[in-house]
Image (cartoon, rainbow, N blue to C red; front, side):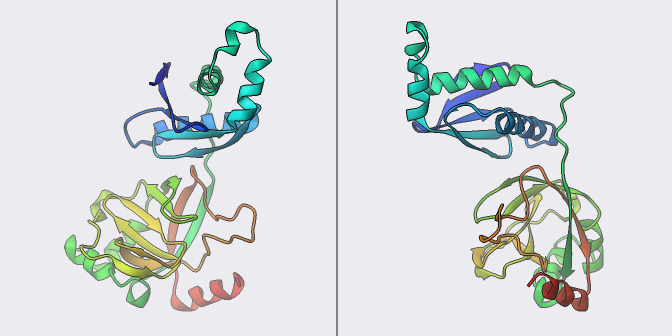
Length: 248
């Protein structure tokens, strides 16, 4: 079962969450709508709201069904027949109608320093060879565009980014590594991303940032969030070491 409201399609996800699908294409315009709806929910939370999790083209909304059920019982007999899913779907529909076409989610620009190549970017030369470029050309292209964080996933704080110049789009490695050093900057297809933890992975590693993307003792524990704009810039080995000292 699904409920359609305006351009959105709302589907249940178990008994305590629903997904609001706001489009089918990976694009900044659709993600703007995802972020705008998330912002409205955070500023106008309903009773029983837990959290909203943005993704590429949709928003997952988690809620407490017990709280929702009791709030339904406070309405008249007609409303008391609504399920928690129907109740939240109605609320989401109301918020969607409040979304103005001119409403713009303001992205935060985060500049990320990266040391490219060598032991810090073991796949840089392979990426360059794949595109018949020099390593320096790959770096120049990778640092040129601002990238958009569409979502965090796979590991805590791992940003999936779009907007990378397609001239350096490169397939994943045929054999994934068993462990990727935290801070490693990689390319997979048309996306670029940063590994926050020591995890397996098949992305082409072209560099490493000295920034810690996941610090569980902090609030929030992740450096980046969905909707952020990222600008990479190249640093030297000495600068990398200086950044590491400052962030200890």
